[in-house]
Amino acid sequence: MKIILVGGPGSGKGTQAQFICQKYKIPQISTGDMLRAAVSAGTPLGLKVKSIMESGALVSDDVILELIRERIQQPDCKNGFLLDGFPRTLAQADGLAEMGISLDYVIEIDVSDDEIIKRLSGRRVHPGSGRIYHVTFNPPRQNGIDDETGEPLIQREDDQVDVIKQRLEVYHQQTEPLINYYADKASNDSSMTFASVAGTGSVDSITRKIQQVLDR
Image (tube, rainbow, N blue to C red; front, side):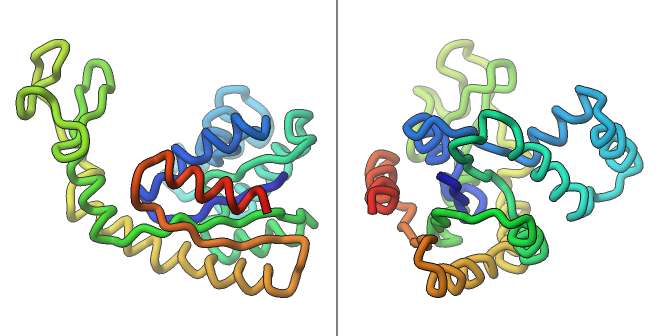
């Protein structure tokens, strides 16, 4: 089973990816994790990526696609995989298609910008442990204070409203076009399913909706 999840930052892709991968015994493939692993392992590609990253340049689509090509040839991908954070652009999607990889499911987790801003801007973190709270959905017992240590909670820089809006703008410009791209592909390929699932409600309810798609 080969799956791609599409959705904005804070839409819940990571949480749902864990459930899917556990249920179907497939690996969750993250390009960010792969970049770090390749650098750590000192592979030829890792050395190439390290020099790019140290120079401050962005890793090109060609390098990302090469990473994906290497990764999906590993034994744990024999029964499929879930792509996390890839593809991010139409160029990457075209590159994936050129590898001859046939996708089974592309699922959009649809959440409004207002809801994403509410979710992300309300997060508070205890720096020492990484414990995460939310001012609305999971507040600490005392406002702004970690339940266990009594130490102050912080708001991460990338959870500030202005930064979230910038991230959403990038998503709408670069990644959102993938929704129509894969919807069109699925309409012309009966072996592939595209579905849009509302990403609001409880985590369990969203999981059930995704499961209904995968059970078709």
